[in-house]
Amino acid sequence: MQKYTKGLLLGAGFLGSFTLGSFLTIHPPRPITTDLVNQASEIFGLEFTEAERDSMLTELTEARESYEKIRKVDLSNDVAPALEFNPIPTGFTIDQTRKPFRRSPAGKVVLPKNQEELAYYTVSELSELIRTKQISSEDLTKFFIARLKKYDPKLHCVITLTEDLALAQARKADAEIKAGKYRGPLHGIPYGAKDLLATKGYKTTWGAMPYKDQTLDLDATVIKRLEEAGAVLCAKLTLGALAWGDVWFGGMTRNPWAPESGSSGSSAGSASAVSAGLVPFAIGTETLGSIVSPSTVCGTTGLRPTYGRVSRHGAMALSWSMDKIGPITRSVEDCAYVFNAIYGPDGQDATIIEAPFNYAPLQSLKGTRIGYLKKAFDAEYPNKANDQATLETLRKLGAELVPMELPSGYPAGDMTIILSAEGAAAFDELTRSNRDDLMVRQIKNAWPNVFRAARFIPAVEYIQANRLRTKLIQDMYKTLKTANVDVYLSPTYGGGNLTITNLTGHPCVVLPNGFSQKGTPTSITFMGQLMKEDKVLAVAKAYQDATDHHRKHPRLD
Image (cartoon, rainbow, N blue to C red; front, top):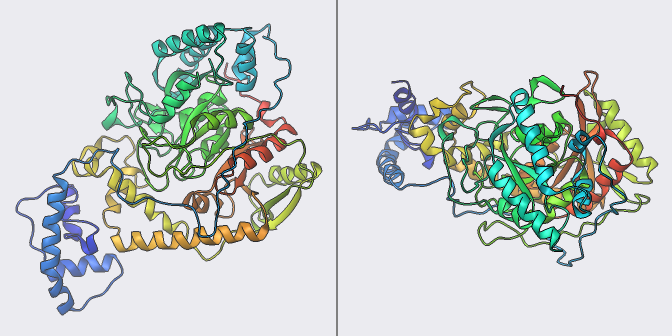
């Protein structure tokens, strides 16, 4: 009766936020009394007189009956609320000028004598080998599938190998290339996808025990677009269960640099597999750090696009107003290739904003204004020396570094009740059915507990947090406009940047900038103005080209 007790704790839906029986339907329901209302109001930090509580009883009882009726209507995870988050501030204009996508010159790339070296080639390098027919997509695909099979027992980064599909796609790519129908830099390139993206004919488990046998009869838009670009899907990769952490129903995904430890998450398998040279690139998602964190731990390069840039159709919903999809790769320009293939409206995700992606590599950073969060860089924190070296490298490249600070006075961490409330709604049935007990992680700091507790977030407070979010978005716009920068730097976990920009929807590129004393990678974050992935990628590439951190790779044997 554990959950029965929890259901009684607050009883009725106070201010429309929760209900008696949130966790179990109880017949007959316990009558709502003024004492029960008083208990509920104390949890929310509110106080009402006895007369005020008595006046609520009819309204609360009727509201509870309404909740029960609403629950009888099936709502699958793919049904979004009739409210759409818009990250665009008042006064912000989107440049609709479209220019050709420009890639860096490929240079001469030759097939190495030791083909094991292909494991750490970039997409750009591998695509040149395929384009010049030095290697076939089928042979390259077999090479990476063999690595996935060899090292997954050590890293636990694969949920499902899609070998049959991969070989069919690779053979198709080879036939097209032979016929002169080359589609571009992703044609024939193997990749992996976080297993919250639906793929026909294969399980889509969301990394969670309650869904480990789930199949969805559709391809996510991102999967479709990568197929259209000629990419070859080799594996559905692990994610922390329901997109939190690195623990899934099969165990903990490992960091190739330190296999005794986890790879962080929730795009755990995507970062681990790319870092280990098991796939040239992978697709991850981020709601509150799930591309940035595993990319940091595993030493990969990740792009978290602007909210509303990549369709989430066919992807597991966690937070409709915060979920974002992006690539995890070996290099910045690889991120540009993948993003160029997956961004833009698809007629399915109503939040997608029409805006061009005019990527072009920079010849020089001389005179480029780049902001940096001065207080965050001046603070004492681990890996500060690597971050200071990053700033110095940018100065040597000719960039003008502009000190700036993020808007202050916002309780950004507290505003993440938005994520908690939306996540609880997305997995409402999981909680009410008690199937959340099947989840592997049952600690306080895990989804089952968070979803249960989120039933007690008042609807009014959820809306108030979103109203604060509107002010934060506007202040971010003013901050960047005043600093006159399209790109700024932040220590990856410094200055509240990660939480604030996930709330506002700004894009970032995270990439390795050195190693810790333990020999594990560290990272730096390049942030961009809304819809300006092209500029943040170009600046980040210029820095990356001046270093070799991304060329280092872990020893697995």
